[in-house]
Image (cartoon, rainbow, N blue to C red; front, side, top):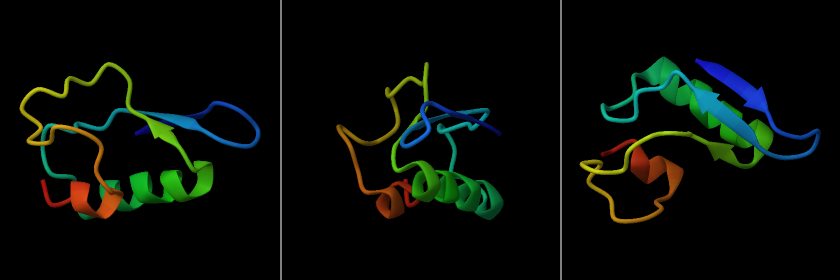
Length: 65
């Protein structure tokens, strides 16, 4: 997993995470830490089809997909 900081104060891009399958505990913790550290995270070029969600969800809820 690669996390690229977008600015000194907020935002990061997370690459190398397969969002089409449930995250293992280590990956979930790393993504959660990135969210805590950067406040906003982006997963670019990820299809939403088949993810089981119609819109944004709370981070803890997304783990249960």
